[in-house]
Length: 406
Image (tube, rainbow, N blue to C red):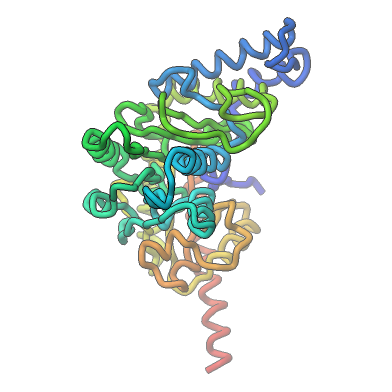
């Protein structure tokens, strides 16, 4: 049985060109980039090249690129680092706690950081309303900004339902607020978790108006365990872990040279093929959505169809439990998911789907299918065929069980 992988939002395979680029850094080019001898300098040269590749892609200076272990660390550094910077400069009793704005359907590595800081009494926290289409509104952001608001964190593309947020519009609001603030006041910073967005949408940080942008390598065909945080020059942010002076003294720890080389190469490939790959993937996704909604009764698309990532299709099926559906599909050779891979061990319904107004039973009946540059039309057709059969079977079982209790 040939397996069909439709969970590329969770992770992607390493591109063959990326693998070829990283292999030498596991063996003959194994030096520590902080060493001054030739082995170390070879490693440092490779890191500098990757940093330039990332800077060219984001339209920023190489000195604004900080390599991390992934988006989770990048998000922690962005949010905690800004909050710590405020605490170091201002007296809470005089100036009040710093205020952070985010959304209730962020990835847990953003939500949990904010909740922890709030619980520890270090910040005030406000959540933007999220609507049925899965998109925040600019008007709501304007209403929530206060004098002590220091950070807005809104993800570029939602990792579960794939909805695209108005990042550039938010960036304009932040710029306007800062123009009205005094030099003595703490600036309002704008952070976006760009993990699911940079593959398909504009990643120019100047056009987006972001001060902080984070993402992971393993979502763009690079190895796991490597990520990036873009930090705009002169942004008030403190390091959150102590140790060496790596990464402009922002991220202590020995460089993951092979991972850094990998993410640099993956970014180079992404920049070259972005337009072509996006067009192909969107066409397949549209085909998938159309076939599912047409061929499977009582099926629904979660989130906006128009303002959506080209690779994401999130459905709910009446009368079907999502976890059972994922397991049944896996037995038939189709890999899918119900929500974020980081939350797959939880029994609670998706916080993302609840945030857009779904009932718990509806959220439990949802399925995420995500595509990549490797996905084919044949795989889509076969996956829909299997999905159609599986949903029908599960509904029959569910109906039989219910009859027994009548």
